[in-house]
Length: 262
Image 1: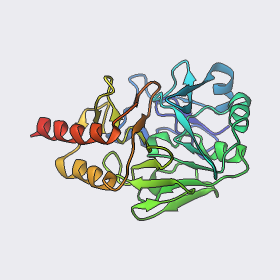
Image 2: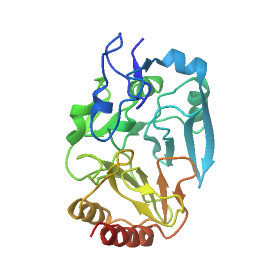
Image 3: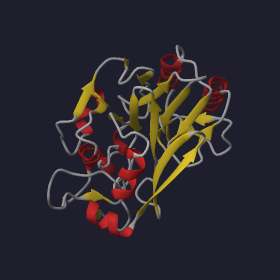
Image 4: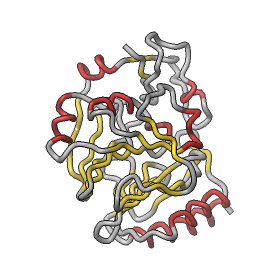
């Protein structure tokens, strides 16, 4: 079985555990005090389960008990088909059935390399749907797969009404997703981190290692989002969503953050 890092959830192409995980050795992650450790998808399916629940109108999928970083995947539904936003390491029959009941998937898009996880298995489970990753982060792919589409430039529309936006910051190709439907939704992973009070978002190069972004990087995110209208912001973690006034939340969060680092 292909090894999966227990700290970040990344799956590797090798069929035997490696000595280290380059994703965790990067300054944005960490190596456990106990050292590198590995699992695999079969073991995850036996020891963990998926928690599938609605959150602010979007179906979210995370893993329980907590595994790796603890992020969730979100099912972004549109009249043209469904896109999986971000990814978790666990995929099993329950997850597949829940998504199929909502119309299946026509694509996958992932905000940044910390959430690539078992994206190849997810694609295979839904007929080899394309996986949209920004080309600036291509070097972080640890399991190459024919379904990966490395896109370039500043925006990409994977489906009508959806736009992938290269925001940068956390990674060079860090991406957020905009959905036009209704008053607009922004799916941000932790490229913009929804704060605990859900009245603000924040920005970091590394959250666990407390490395902030500089002024230019935050202003770049602000500029990338400026053309888009959105009411809600859906974050990387369960119950981390901004329910209303999303644009105003980002605007005041940018100014608060920049004032703090000044």
